[in-house]
Amino acid sequence: MYPRKYRLADPLNVTQREKLFQSTSSKSRHDRTTAILTPRWWLVLPCLTLIILIQSSDPLLMNDFIIRHYERRYGFDTSPGSQHKDCIKSQRTSSSSQSYWQFYSNDQNHPDYSKVQQDAASFHTKNSIVGLIPASLTFILFGANCDHIGRRPLIILPLIGKIIWYSSMLIIVHRNLSDTWILSARALDSIFGSGGLIMLGALAYVTDCTNTSNRPRAFLLTEAIMFLARIIPVLAIGIWLRYFQYTVPLSVCLSLSVIALIYAIFIQPESIDNVRNMSFFKQLTLIRLKYLINIVTAYTKKRSDNKRQLLLLITIISILIQVAVFGYLSVLSLYLYGQPLCLDALHVGLLSTAQAVLVFLWSTITALINKPFDNSYLPLFMGIFAVIGNLIILAFAKTIWLLYIGVCIGSLTFMIMPILRAKIVKQIEIDEYAIVFIAAGIIETVGHSAVGAAANSIYNATLNFLPGLVFLVFAGIAIISLSILSSLAFVEQKISKNTNAKLMRNRRDTI
Image (tube, rainbow, N blue to C red; front, side, top):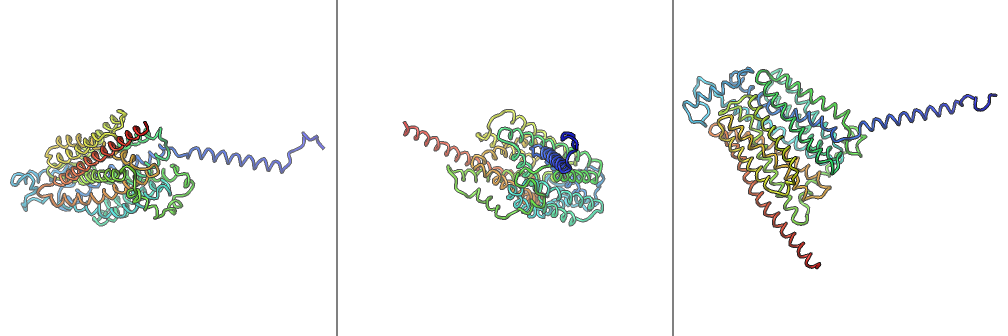
């Protein structure tokens, strides 16, 4: 026998050593994987940026497609370089024999271009209606459950819908299918949720992965990236559609949707600890209807110091402002394409780009001022007056330079919603933040579709005598919000005085 120190290792010990080594290696690999997949707030930015790129280009792209679709039906020139020459020609013909607001003559020698605008407005109304109920139900169900099922389902599901939508549109464009196919594709897309659902999931993701110290900076950077993402696609689509057709931009949007979906499934981790290791389908099984009650309860429960009254007033103002803004945006591209302006995709893209740049500049300046604007009502009044001024200018503008003046004024609108959100936060408890903002998102989603349908219906009905009347209607809604804001300022000032009086009495009693 060899001395003990020269003996070969026992096979059993070798086996144990190998198992220990394998266990240690597996654990280290797991630790490295966990470190890579640890949720960080900036991990949601790729998906958010891609969906903003897609959403920003979609309204202009679809409006141009629908306009040319009906121009082709009525025998107008639909070549990429035509630049709405028939619209301008019809404008000159009608202006020589009729008043400014009476668009087109009944001369049988000239096609009636007003029918293009009327049919396009009718289509946009139907398009908004078919997506209203599915998108609203999906947002309500998933929004109310987002704290329990996690954030990733809110991001993944709408991306699946976008892939279906752009795949269907490529087939529709290639085969020149009827309006029914477009409406069916929109309804199917809406079942999977809207872009607002992704916005809710992304903002909730940022909130989960930040604390009170770094959250403002994270939201500021997120907002800045969102604004920048809105600038590029609209301008690019406007330039492209001036010379080319739709296959390439639709293919790009489809590719971006696929890339975003792959990223959300395989790279982006879940920010909610309880469901982090669950698959997407397992997370969906956690949906419960009972969480819908919490949304109603947040607005109906009793609160101290008249906070429920203030919460309701702020919410009503928020709804009215969103109705005014969503309403005019839903019909703006169609209005600019028609008479009296007859703009093409490039000019509409430049106008939208100018507004996005101004909003980005104003938001940057506001962030650098480092002043709590939520304590003042002056920015709110300025923002609402900016909405009203922009809408009045749009209603009566006959030249492009007036439109740019309206855009400059309307860019101040961005101040309204952040301040209203800050005021809402003051009226609720910490554990109610998500529920209240989910309710606001539901209102936004429902309003976007319902108000869009109403706006296009008003434009269609008033097209032949005052096409800008739709903007005056939404200006009137903004004026109503202005009167409610005055009531809110009065109520809050009264509550503040009563609170100060109570504090003074308590101090005197203590002395």
